[in-house]
Image 1: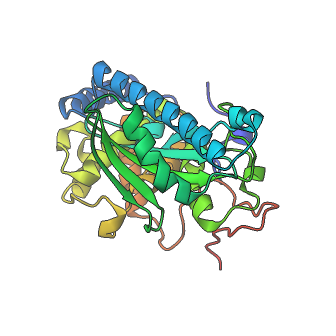
Image 2: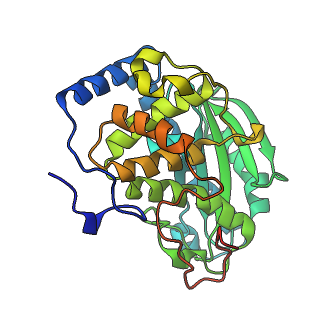
Length: 313
């Protein structure tokens, strides 16, 4: 069934809402098989290990918030309800992680827990609660642009960042989509919350998440290293000379930027398969009218006094 243009996702109507042909479906199957050959998907055992690791981090977060609450002499009723919750973002939350991928993780706490508390008390509580030998490495970097604790937990790389809300408690039911949660926060907290909020919104703005994930996996693999030409066909062959053009620190698009580019193409072809999106991606992005920005939705100013990116300024 074609998607109605009145309900389209994106700042413009789709270019095409045609359903995939049998040949395109077959090409998409070939794409997925090639991604598997390239070891782009991890096994069920490693995925389960990730889930258990995140459950452990959540338990540590709850205990950390309780510890700090008691340290500040708060009433037991406040200690019991203070909460604390972790959120993921980046490739794990987008659903495009593979073997060896790290998990970008955000620790959200109530207003009486400070960033100083996080770097002073979270690491020792984590070491105390973790199974023997689970923590292979831990490096706090409090002075980074986005302060972070990097660690290896049960063989999985975790990047922990911190955000404090103006709320007195952070229940497990908390949803970061509520813009009112941003009131009264400093720039560092806003930057930390931004990762999860942007990741979630990208997923909401694509017509088909499964198609988006398949295409993004292939684009990321292409950006990181050369991809076999036969997977996508001759339409994209001329773009395949490049490689190693991934990562902000190297001056190239990072994970979120590549995700936004793929998401925009998905909006323009909402019924297409992942393999078709790949071909359209190279054609559209290679001819894009830079510095015109790639926009997934209309820019919102919002009621809050926070900086909003505007390409016209």
